[in-house]
Length: 152
Image 1: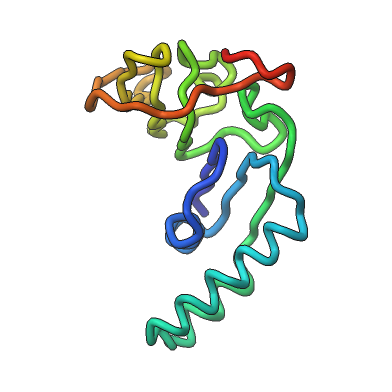
Image 2: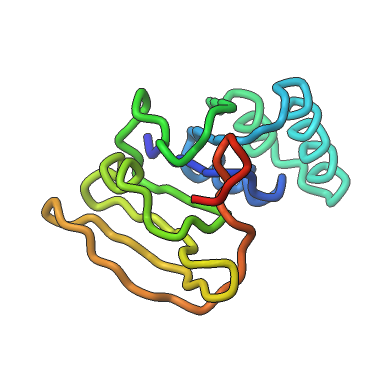
């Protein structure tokens, strides 16, 4: 089974697609657990409303493992590493070393990095223990914020 770590939140549909593909997701989000449950229920209803009634898809949504935690995602989630994929949806000024370490061999990480006005979306692929970096496209994401409110 593939595992993915998502720093911050994806849209409900994007998260559901990732969960369905990976079979398991670990996401860091500052939302309360009951809100997460309500959000996933809303996504399920939206999918059904769009006419997706495939029993396999709906059953997979019910049984897939979902793990959420609230701490600062800069340190990743070492207890569940390594991850086959890491998706970061806010921009630190640099790539967090903990996330590099938690990427599995052959794994990929997509992360925006840079300051408030100059950011690049970066793809990292771990091959033979080394990280290969490819700049993908200039972007503008919200900054990655510490618990004290200051950016990383």
